[in-house]
Length: 370
Image (cartoon, rainbow, N blue to C red; front, side):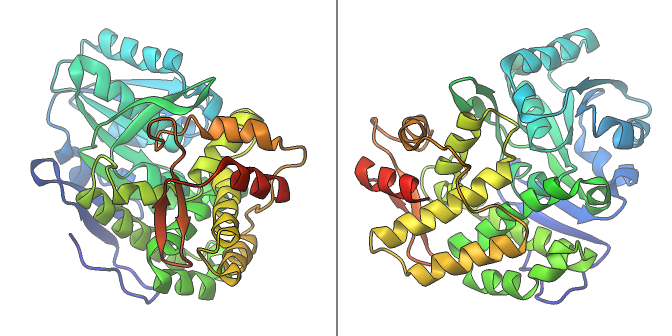
């Protein structure tokens, strides 16, 4: 895997990292104007049939550039409505129908052009079509660039819970064009910063220190600071995925804050809270719960909350949250085993851990305290 990005602010025009999975290894390219660099990413496409899946927000901005890079191939596009509420089996069926219309063979490729919703849905469609065809991630949101596009988790939501239907299916490559962030709404951008903070919180105290120093630059979208944060986040994620592809151990730590966060997303109705906003609240709850249990210093939970607030992220439960209902939703989390909750807590900044024996009473007390 590539060496750690430097702690300075300047990055080369295109940075390449590797997700080391043997024969299924793949590159992550990070740089500006990569959508126009078809000579680079087109070599990841092995067949002649290509379906580009995007949404109504991203397609008008970037779909033409991607289709132009596919000239000479049998190509089609599917533009879906934007939003988490559309990450459903029905929309996945539309993608499968588009592949059927294209008469896509087993050497086909699905390109996911959009944020995490499109990446998850298009990747799941690729995993299902003829028991698995290639797909390419072109994430256009910060959250997708630093998290969901890397690692091969694909899936859709059910009314009962988030990401309950899915598959591990690794992409052929991840193309991160940092220029796409210029069109990202402020709330979406800040939502993505929650996943950046997570990497420092769970396993890299030095990166957390860097984030505290660079918080103002990140909040202001300083291009060098953002590019460095993306590279360091991807490097962390790539390393974890290479060591634990199917979340049998270490990879579960990447879900710090997510058990609480997914419950909040489901309870509030998909789309009311952005994923990163829910994760930010969830990370604060997990840190506070760790302190409640005597596992971590309360001062570290305060540092985490302060950093997220500086980045414009929420840290408090929405008004009117029902602690009992949230707890029941947490029991649908995929990390649970034999009907028992397995939470990702921490010993403090940079030291997350899997904790299987937290009582319902302790969780309810934290949810009611906020």
